[in-house]
Image (cartoon, rainbow, N blue to C red; front, side):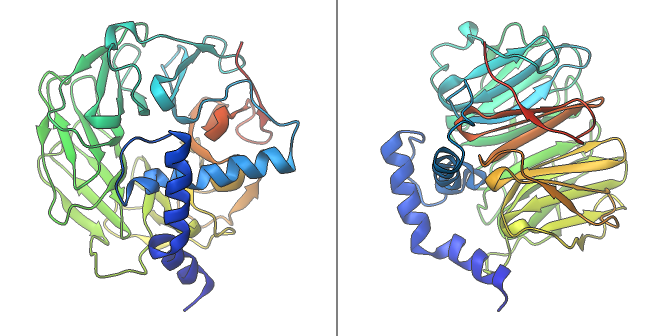
Length: 358
């Protein structure tokens, strides 16, 4: 058994996770008491330690935003938004240079719930998903948000739109939801085995992918009504890493996960191959930027590689805080994470620097 396998097994079944979960519960960052909730992309759990390391190692590097941030996205030709713990919603009207707190007035009394994901289909339409099956919808580019009934009480870790009407949402206990009417009705497509799914993406109104526990990658070609397993999906394989992020551009795709595991495809997921990684830290977000892909994770790790995985993986550490999501709009990129960290680049990732909230 290699070092990577040892880390996966320890992280998956060891006593460390129980201790971390107790630490998280004491801080009140998560409210549900269940064995896998500590895995929330392994974000909050590992982030407790990462935040502590940041405070001890780099006392000057403290963001003005203290609330944990779980997701970031931009409106095309419009503002950036970031969401996080206890209803945190931030916005930036200057391409990510400065950030302001926002209220989700239309969403009350749901505003205290943790918000895990924010994504936009176009310049007007987008969604937020979160704790206890929460789904919010905007039709005005994020100015206002309205609650939609998901029909579930599971954690919804990611919501991915294909267009203004079609979207999928994924979460705990095998939960996959899909809508074909802008979220007026969400249909449940519960998967056998009750695996937790951590990320989702759609390349158009019908094709989508989800990733989760046990190295699972699944694909839909009908907007989320039916799913086929492309990789993993078996609980019996205890050495299989959890996959936390998936991203596609045309036929190229990349998934990233626990222990620095990376897999790429150049044929829409028909074949996945392992990508040699320069880190064994867990990676939680992957996003395409032109001809490159950026992957973010624990200990402020940012990886940069080609979509095919043929290019060697380069690594930078602009912060010590755990990074939970990353997004790009043109040459501008934004990465967010625990402890309210916000990083920005305006040169396609050549240089990253910390920004704060007004």
